[in-house]
Image (cartoon, rainbow, N blue to C red; front, side, top):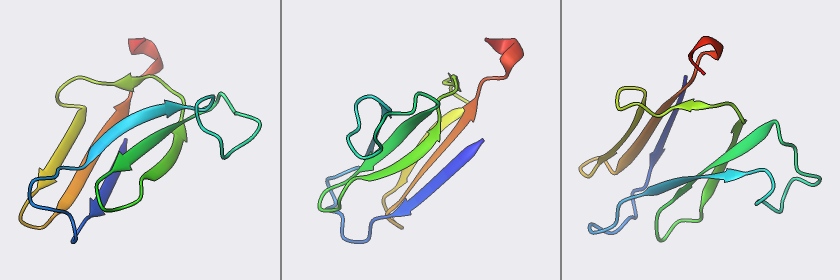
Length: 89
């Protein structure tokens, strides 16, 4: 399991943080690309995009195992993800 929490105190009221996954081959920072990893990107204007290097393992994207939450009052974005067990693949 991985849990990411980011607070965006300067975010506009009509903006919600976004996430996406990027393969090692899309990114331009770590060269040569290492296929054992992928990148979790989090973006919210006016902030720079934040990237986390995570294992390139299959993710459990079921509703209870892949959860995002934007708390508009505290301006905190939370993302929880689980990796699939090898037996579940």
